[in-house]
Image 1 (cartoon, helix red, strand yellow):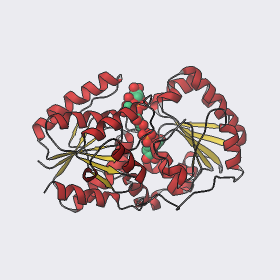
Image 2: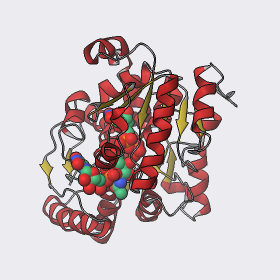
Image 3: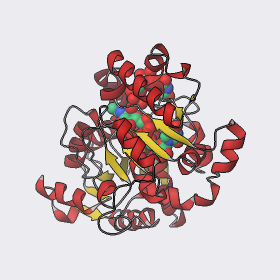
Length: 359
Ligand code: UD1
Ligand code: UDP
């Protein structure tokens, strides 16, 4: 009985925090299952500390592997867990392998599934996340969407409208709820960072898995460093390849370990611009008003372009785009300032639907 939240990777923790907190406020019976997909302190435990998330009731310790190996291990672990706990509802977040594995296992055990951040589509099946999102949404009894586009995608795929709730963005709840804890100045002093810098974060397989591509991106990041210092917390996925390519050899490139949530958003807040391929960072920069250059051919988060500070760039036009942004030329925003319902109350909306549903 009760609600079981399944989380496993860095962005999951940021999205789950406001939902868990809102349900706690309503006295709901809930538990948190950590799959262990991410396990380094800086990829996992630091988020529980920063976000005041309850220590997971269990950590399945699944760890890394190929997609099949990891997803299979996730499913075996989660099946045992769900069979023992018999949850009334399983809540999954985002688009990582832990998300789809939990949805599959719950659906086959006849346990209702709720998907937080449903309906995002890049229409690019070379991204593992796109496959995870599509499958998860088809299996979910409740789809919580962050944007009107997402609602449209679900409708187009035949998801019944009574399963879909437009609730805004819980990742933005976490951002707004912690605004006074992101101290860019203090971080700069503590880490000895320069006054003006471009923050970078890259971890998508399409960017970091191929060593030749990493060498090309390293050359571009070195060119950016001629314009402004570059500060990059390096995701473990690309670390070896960027080290081999000599990214840190440039005197104006500063490589860091992955940062905790409060430090990373402080870094973003203090940046002249952000270069990224992260999903969440496109959304956070939208609200913080920091120019975001997304090194990808597409985005499943188009509201960050229409309502935010985001632009898609290729490796070939990256330098020109950074130059423009550093000269204060940012693209005009179309429409409202921020996407609808990105107001810090999504966790409450989700909790309200979940408690009514499980009654
Ligand atoms: C995963 C998600 C991706 C998400 C990202 C967030 C999938 C398919 N991908 O990608 O959507 O954007 O998390 O950060 O679920 N590793 C460590 N320490 C850790 C975790 C991973 O060193 O704590 C290394 C391992 O070498 C591992 C590699 O990172 O093989 C990739 O980890 P994995 O969880 O498979 O995928 P991510 O690239 O992190
Ligand atoms: N983040 C962080 N430390 C870092 C990089 C990112 O705390 O070094 C945060 C970021 O602010 C956002 C989330 O992690 O809240 C995004 O996760 P990530 O980029 O790993 O995954 P994606 O959103 O692309 O799935």
